Image (cartoon, rainbow, N blue to C red):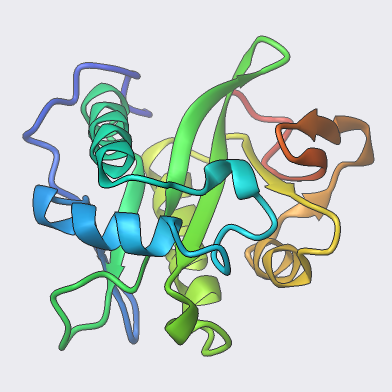
Amino acid sequence: MAPSIGGFGRDVETTLQTERLILNRPRGEDIDTMFRILSDRRATRHNPSDALNWREEAEGLFQHWDEQWDRHGIGYFAVRLPDRAEPIGFAGTKHVLCDGRPVLILYCRFDHRFWNQGYGKEAVRAVVKHANELFELPPMLARVRPGNTAWAEIVRAAGFEPAPGLGSQGEDGHEDAYVLNWTRNL
């Protein structure tokens, strides 16, 4: 049986490990890295509205991410290499409503120095596997801006399929939708 949504609190400690990566719940000491990655216009070029301008924004974003973990027992992970304390990126899911229906939306941002090495695919696959196990195949959605071929490749590699009828207008323009387990309920 899937856990109920809400009431997870701080006792939920989830660490995922892949062949090359360790993913865990972000900590306060990760805020500077969050700011560095999310203020880098290379990391947010397809979603400029996600770009941070001040460290205080990273602090607020960290609080939001932390509340997602507390409420839902899942959220965005800090992605680390085993020999490196500082995250190389962030990947995970968050709960959203899509046409009034609760779904998990996929997210991934990496330091540009770690692009094109397969870390994004590896992290996203671990996140999707974890969500599938925790919530018994929940409906998941990935929003992909036209031209962001790297993100489209990552979500397709994780098993997501295009859903043309779910494309929408986001803050930065049109976003294509990719889905996984879409006929299921959360």
